[in-house]
Image 1 (cartoon, rainbow, N blue to C red):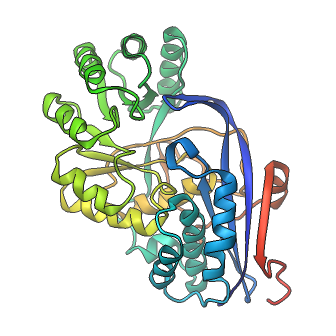
Image 2 (cartoon, rainbow, N blue to C red; image 1 turned 120 degrees about the vertical axis):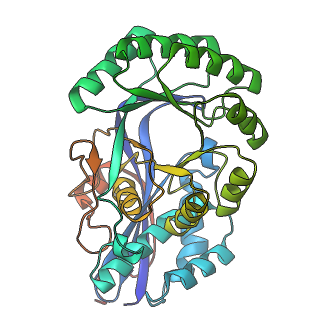
Length: 373
């Protein structure tokens, strides 16, 4: 099976509610879809996030990186060793994780299709059925957030809910209090600061929140590992790394400095499956836990395969809803779980009509017509 062409498409999918973080607010989830076309007619699909304030790459930059730097590496290659191709991709364009992820995720899909097995089998097989999900409470007035939290628990039975903080710490505490008191112990809250607090703001807010009760995990409240380690020593609630970890070397530093006991894996932030696998090995060896971000479409399918295969994915994964999908068969929760398909590759297919509907830009290299199949 030889790769003969690469196509990339930017799509902007509407969210079910505005997402507000310390980085800003948005109503759209912008992603880049990657299709690797082969001489057998099989197409491997990948997806990556566009989050320039978080990951440093714009949609235009990802398109350019893939078409001019990464696609030339894979066009003409046999789908033999993902590791060898991955190494060549890294040499061609180091450190551009979001760009790498779209191509690398598509390579795993192709390899699974070539061998006729789901990707979780390529990773060693299942240790569990899939992901355990947590809910999400959108940033709003305290009473609105409290009502949404109660509705999420009553509707879905979530034991953990995620909410964004990292803005004004006094307001953050007020929102946390309203939600926690409304839940009355029926679910824990994972707060996510997205590095928005200073150390002193975090010390104030976490002291207040632990006194209120119901705090389950604290995701990346501050930017530096040193400050995270201070918080980890000060409070009983687990600190979770997000922005502190991009590559496996970062995970080693977090473990060595005792900066966190949990980490959230955003597959596109880490450049794809291989880097997440390496981080999972680091955290697993240290007897620490991972959670998987499943914010859209194909990435939800990818995350379910990785969670099924990696023993250390022990903390629930945040699940948010989009109003539209570019898949014919998007992953859907089964109660509190999201399990991978047993079909080859990621087990999902693109809905090309939906791709065309939500597309904002595209590019191709090589033969993407299937005429050589």
